[in-house]
Length: 433
Image (cartoon, rainbow, N blue to C red; front, top):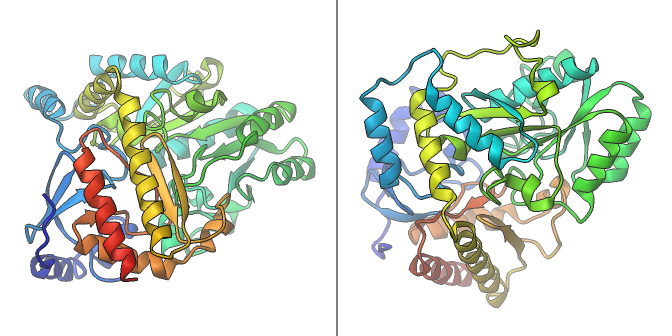
């Protein structure tokens, strides 16, 4: 049940105030600080299913899902049971374990582009490693990324990045040397001509193109018809690699990710979030001839003490098992479409311009009367209105991502009642904006 009582935040305020003396900005990751929506963040105490409880014991319906991994719902009993058994064997090996084989085989069987996979500890780490691999395989240094696409906080990717960088209004980051980004070329998302022009202007110098096939770090932005197919054709024409960053979309918009959904197979793929079932994890994989360049099979070095951690492997295996059950993705699509359709209707009925949509269990909404195809389009939306909407929804017991530049996530634990309460809350909040 969503509480109708006034939101009590005294304990959250006390804890966050202390945190600001202990950690930069009081957080371990920037978007959590609520900088773009105002006010102080709530401090979580526990999660279960589709719900959050904060330290003041307020309850919320959650549409962040720990930024995507909780697709089965928080603290799923089967995942917890599997983790409990795994804990008895130890928390870290730093050596090969059979669970890596099991999850690797599941990933390879699911994702069309992946013939071999390497596990790491985060999406950022996966993207760092795949960039090194792209350059080594092609013998070229330059890459193309898209404005508003976020591939982690590695130096070479912090060029016109989205997500937390956009939220904080930072075009790039101090401390990133020019040498680290001079080989990173950028183009507007959904602009094939801009990509073609970059290839023409840099003949024989571009190792490949990396992108979020469905953007979640400029808000929810979908590829135009033919965009992904066009990138596949261009990269083949110029003998470059195509990389899908499916850290968000992998196992979320389809079991085989965006590449299954759209029928476009890249050369390499990065993964994270869902494949760890809520524990820290990342992975990259692709064609066997490319992946065999990774040490110790080949000369491209990459390593990690906690890579292939047995607890992360266990949670990932159980999560993917649950997702394979009949009707899973049909349920996610039905629930998410019902939610976003209701939110948009609530906005329009209360006199607010809004646009948005969903693909399976990933969704988003912008306060604008224009369709959003790119980062520039997203920046044209009414962020001040979003901030007030976010606060109103928070006070109504609905937890949305605290930034316009983040997608929302549905889980199997959400119910029709949750959706109806969320839409009703949105109607009330939007009526008062």
